[in-house]
Length: 159
Ligand SMILES: NC(=O)c1ccc[n+]([C@@H]2O[C@H](COP(=O)([O-])OP(=O)(O)OC[C@H]3O[C@@H](n4cnc5c(N)ncnc54)[C@H](OP(=O)(O)O)[C@@H]3O)[C@@H](O)[C@H]2O)c1
Image 1 (cartoon, rainbow, N blue to C red):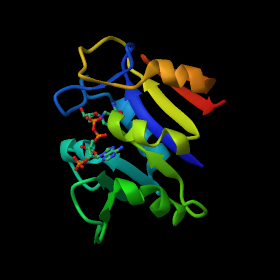
Image 2: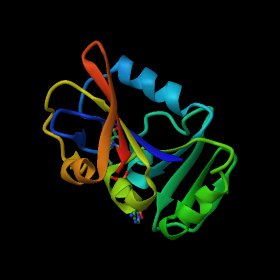
Image 3: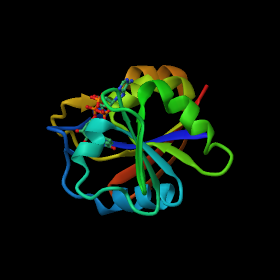
């Protein structure tokens, strides 16, 4: 199953100026690490560019781009958007696949995303990048919700 995992604020904002909009959030980062370690993380080129440390350790890192040919380096690889769905078939039986953003990549891969795992960060952070709240609410059902401190963790499943 292919799942997306992101954090968003109360307005479904996910990014600002190429970075995360809120202060360091240990609960969210712990949740992200626990879920994705050992799996495949797939991200858009802008998300990759904004990572403070890369590649993300103990995970296969796949970066989606239009502008480069497919390139494979020891611990991460660039894949053209046109090839990404085929590429993910290689891992489907053996590893968890997590689409980790940003918004452009999510919008391009809606047809293969079975679940959204969203940490909802308290507050509104004047973002410039958003998840499409209306689309997700129309096409996915909120199946599970739990809370740790001020962060709630929601799982939305495709209807
Ligand atoms: N809160 C969170 O959980 C979270 C998670 C991830 C990212 N973010 C934030 O989100 C922002 C970045 O998101 P974004 O939406 O601007 O960019 P993005 O999706 O990370 O990356 C966009 C780039 O990826 C490639 N790409 C993605 N989708 C494509 C498609 N459908 N077709 C062709 N190429 C595609 C293109 O690369 P080329 O230009 O190289 O062709 C495109 O310019 C940053 O602020 C980041 O910090 C937040």
